[in-house]
Length: 92
Image (cartoon, rainbow, N blue to C red; front, side, top):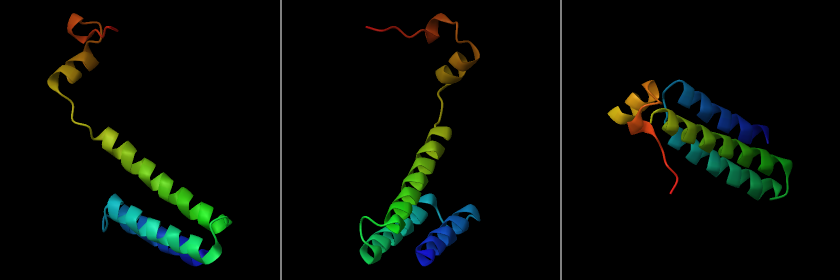
């Protein structure tokens, strides 16, 4: 297991240093998680931890996409003036 976590940690570190993208790190982590499950069994703690790391990385990618979402001029206006008539949302 330390070998699997070491490989995943190295991938995460390379992402933090800007040498790899988050997608590359996720792909490497998936490969390592599959290897951990194959070697230690699907019910092992090592397998579960490796897949938890993959899920965390995927969540990070999702959060970053939300943070970099491009806003329209109307979105920006409504953020500054939420009480404006143009910014009202009605349920139908």
